[in-house]
Length: 84
Image 1 (cartoon, rainbow, N blue to C red):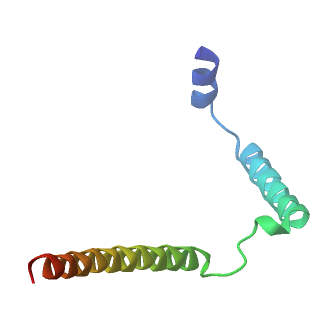
Image 2 (tube, rainbow, N blue to C red):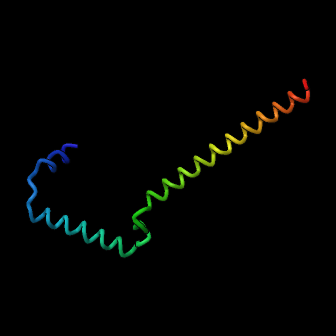
């Protein structure tokens, strides 16, 4: 990719840089107008997703704990019937 190396080392005029930044800003504004659903709906978007994830982990832990407690109590009850 020698053509890229030459492009990266070539000096960039300040006018070209300003035009490129303006083009990017115009494109971003057009995208926001055309696709408003892509914008986050609230400030806590990531926090809500993290909270849902944390809740689901606690539900799984509770289900596992109750399953183990149920199995242990059944084993104790079976042992009491057999040996009691």
